[in-house]
Structures are given as structure tokens and as C-alpha cells.
Length: 187
Image 1 (cartoon, helix red, strand yellow):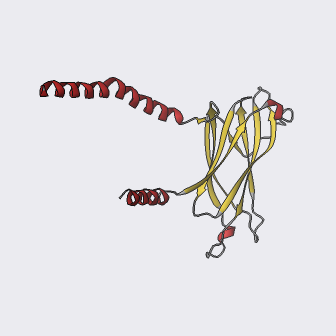
Image 2 (cartoon, rainbow, N blue to C red; image 1 turned 60 degrees about the vertical axis):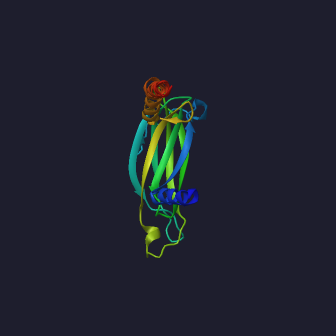
């Protein structure tokens, strides 16, 4: 019976998977920079604590040279950790590459990085011309706190702490009272 429920749980998890995700953990370090930034602004800019953009690009394949896009990661603080995450449809047979190609220091003493995003078509499709169609993806830059906690985690932490406090202060004492009253009534 447990095996049957386990199979159902696995099927439900697989059935609700709609996206592939790849990520890059970046530690912004002043000693990795190449001097002052030249002032060139790239087309798309991402800034902490949380920025998301939706873009598309054509993956590289045997019949197509593909394309890449560059993003500027601005206002990064020295010694801070960031997660760069890319999500794209699971039906897309492509692998995305996230590469830092330049790092520099800005005039306001923050760091700026240039991120190159490219993709390689990795599958075989029966749909004619599929390998030359653009892939839509979401790119996210998020602060990491304590090296692994992402920016949006505070909502989950607050919910967990609320449940623990509620359980410790309200639910457990109420259950103890019910048990002790029940035991006194039976005696």
C-alpha cells in the first residue's frame, strides 16, 4: 500500500514539473574586478535584492549558430553572495550556459558584472525547424543571506516560526490540558 502511494506521489511530482532551472552562485569580490567600469550600459540590467526578467534566445545547434545575450548585474556589494537563476520550459531540449565575462568597480564603490547567457540545443525534435525557434526563459538575480538563504525565504521563515510558536504556546498546552482532564475524569 505504501509503495502504491509512493508511486502516486512521484507521478504527481513529475506531472507538475514544468520548467528546467539552472543557477550560478556568485560571490562579489573586489579583487576579481578589472578596474573601473567604462560606463557602458548593457541592454538589460539586474539589481539586488531581487530582479526578474523574461527574455528569449535561439539556442545553438548544428544548423544554427545560435545567439547569446548579455546582462549587467549592478549594485553588487563586495563580499556578498548572489544567486543567478534561469528557468525555461521543460519541453525545450536545451542547456543554458551562464558565464561571467567581465567584472568592474563602479564610481559609487559597488561592483558590476557582465553576465553572458547562451543556450545549446541538445535534443531531437520531430517538429520541423524546432531547433531554430527561440526559447523563452526567466532570469533572476537574488541576494543570498548567510551564503545560502535566498531573498524570498523570509516569508517561509516567518510562516515556520509562526507555526512553531503557535504550537508551543497554544496547541501543546491545550492538548496537555485535554489529556490531564481526561485522565482525572477516568480516575
